[in-house]
Image (cartoon, rainbow, N blue to C red; front, side, top):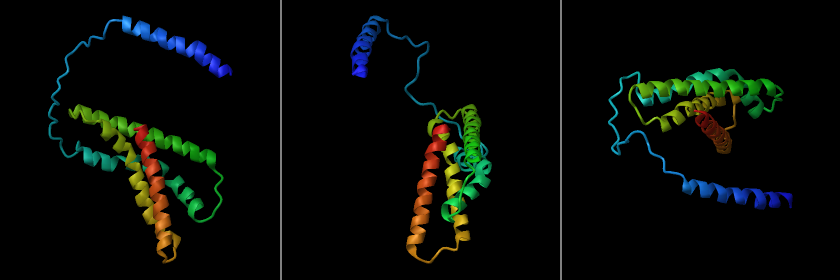
Length: 175
């Protein structure tokens, strides 16, 4: 009841008050004129190629979390107890900080090379960490000594794909 009263007595009058002052204000005048035609992006050299940068950028954050990933995978797939959650949280923060730093650095280089299409580049740069995690899970699968049943492979790689996709979205959002 109190929330409904606050909504009716505070929120609704403020909406109408803001609309009144908003319509009464002058429109925003931009200081420069923007062209509707996109500028041509110059051909990058080998080191500034966006595809190469995206492919290699995930190595640094993956290296920051590589050791902890081994223990997480061991506890997840080999029925071992995992009890170092504080350290895992610190490694997670280091992973996110590393993703942000690598993305800022590589986006700066792309903008210096006059590449104005940086939005998806920034997302994919840090999100490529998940590709390395999935590749690591493929190599780690060999140490499991799995059964030869197709369901085993389907479950393992299905779950690891979902975990990697979640990591892709998380690290990509940070980038």
